[in-house]
Image (tube, one colour):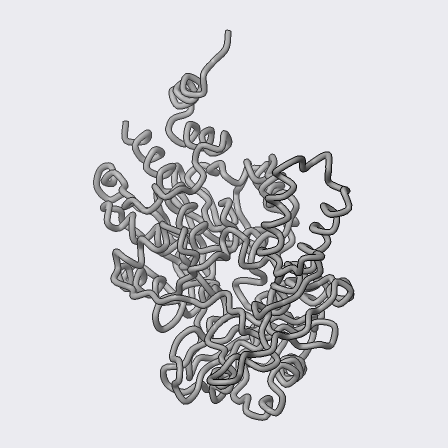
Length: 520
């Protein structure tokens, strides 16, 4: 006898309660993020009086959980090891200290009003849940210029504008396809009028001459731009396919802005990426304990006992939502089952590094207002600021290294000293903007693999790809008695604040069912 999905989920819920049904729905792909995530999240009121929950970690997931649970009448305590909230949504401003394991501390000396998003860098416009909290809490947003055709690309020892790299590749590929059509190589795929229509389309799409050669007319830029009176403009000569083949690491930059969660428009909170986290914190400030590293997670009756560093009194609660990274959780003594411990053990974390400088906004003199520049050198990419246009000074992110143009770059760049990272970044900026590297001032750098209480940015294990999430991932979705797990690593939106929010909301639904079951 066949069983419908609805009947199966009803039976699963009858046997295992809401949490079993919820996890079943997630496993069946019925809970992927959709625009419905823009709807306000609501929890039932806490059952009975005095119900307590301890939340481990005051990143986005922990703060969202604290905010929603407090509003629903729970007695909430948030434990955070750092001296700040927001986790990897870390914005640095003048006066902030940067601690890195095994490296000298740094002091950020940026002028008032300037900032550096050392962690999270942007918000996709389709990430409805995190944007919903910005709306609800009154956090103003502005456009983050993620793509800018005027930005510089440095590949194979040559610097070109992004518009030339993108349009010349399109033109050369269109030329190959057009010539294949002209030579009859695609007669089996294209017949009759389709062949004519495709050939006409390629002529316009790729700026092709009648014989199929790529003949740029200006999309790629100009040697001499069009002007007044007798200045018609002169298009740049095209880059050849051979130019691109010498730099295979250009592949990701060529498609970067077509990736679903990198498409324009992107957004950012006005004044720094951490503004949403701090708005959440303002609602639960009295419930958050900073400088409170967890040293053990223990069961106590039906509840939990969280032991803390420094001999401080443990926190005892009915329930726990643990948002700690798996790499950190593995190191904390606990009473978890053998299956849970096995699921947590040995998961490598992705690492990434950044460098930022304060400088006069010389890039705007070249027509660059925001956007990402790319290089095949170890510093990989740079971000031009998307706000404060025409202000005297700004913060230029001179390196963002995460394997964009070469996986080896991640370890190589992290291994460099602070000064070596600054020098590598300056070298690329000097090639892109000759004579301007001398203007770069007040450098700072962050390597997430060396950042205490992070030690990376997220799981890099094969079980965390969308195609191969297996038994290990499924085990981490299951509560460990009163301990429920959350964080962006337990979502299909890894490395994004949206994933942290949706994971926290899923964990709270499981928590609500647990509490209701105990109260029954």
